[in-house]
Length: 308
Image (cartoon, rainbow, N blue to C red; front, side, top):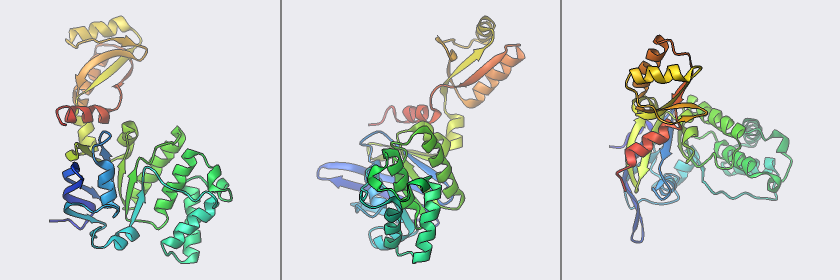
């Protein structure tokens, strides 16, 4: 049964391109008020899935609702309630930034005063006010990416589908993107975002859906996943010999030493917390202690290592 209280609810979706089955019995949900991350390698079926949700491809089988509506039977209704940002988007180069956004406000049939107000609000939210009167073609890739995100949000959609929105963004813009998406979720929107930048998703998402080979490989609460996943850790102390002695006493395997500290074996957060408490109790002056790399990335690799 489809749950209409979810922003996105898809069950057993399949989509073929000739003999290639890009999506194979995939199911997922994206609740209102949360950011759901869509994670998977190239060719996993993420973009095909998003195109089906965005009314641009019809599934061969399965059932789906976006904002409570069927994208196949009521695409116009879905588009009125959904914001779609593809990984590759077109812009009208000869329009100014303001004209570009106002064009889409009109396309969404926003009344003129409302449309102008939404354009002004969007320019501020995406930090493009100073470029409002400039032609779109003079913008950098990152600025165009922010403009596309602004276009997606103009009509205050209940559901946002974002395919690689952080592509081309500098570090500051990525932080601003994170804040925007968290703000939209806080206001009640359902945000489904696909990205290869797993460290970014780890900070943004409430939930994660892993996809590989056109199938879902698990849906998880992000906090539970990070807490329960075993990942490698690194510790640094003011006295490395004392640190090594304390680790050896506790039968902890000691890996390579880098500028960041001593490499430790796979541990869950609870096990790492116990070890840290023990080191401090032993009098080791710990300077830093944390996981190496992205815990989301490590969890994804662990979950999908045996899948095609």
